[in-house]
Image (tube, rainbow, N blue to C red; front, side, top):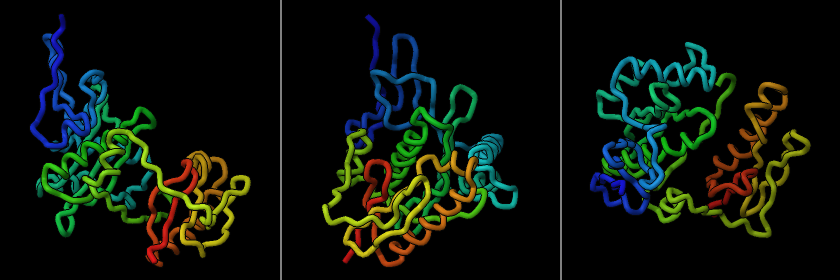
Length: 260
């Protein structure tokens, strides 16, 4: 009978999130170096590990360029800066399919024992991005941390309380959908692929996101820019007023709640 058992790292969260540092399978040991792995089905096709070598940082640089098409003078991070960050004890990880890097994530410490997730990019599909975020979450928990282009760009700070019940449910892949009350209003809608600004005076406001924005950028740059500006005005305006994004509705709308 084949022996198959998990090797655990001792973290208190392992049982909750199905984490295994490695799996012994007969005469082989599969090292995952990532969180969220099911020891009954885990394979060695993709592994996630922290990066420390110069050539690895250059791989991250090349991968991010492939994903976002950054110009040399507009890169959000460079191989040299990644090297400096890791020397200072910060976070840089890579996801590998064999010898090929298929995803990477960079983060650094902020105020009040927080981890600022700066960039995470992954090859399309296969759940690599999700696994990268699980790896980053466990890395932060192990160090007692609490949270975590091309053309124009907008950024919103997302705070991730790592031990909240809904976060731990999401790690277990249990949906945690935000409540959408009957009196919710649509602040930004989709009319045949074009953004339409509507009402934003409700307690809960739905803000639409375009379907397939990357495809849209390639086939209709005008529409893509219109969406960016509309999102900036509507969602950005709500954020400036102190509203909070509580989740997503049907993968189509941000659910935004006023904190009044």
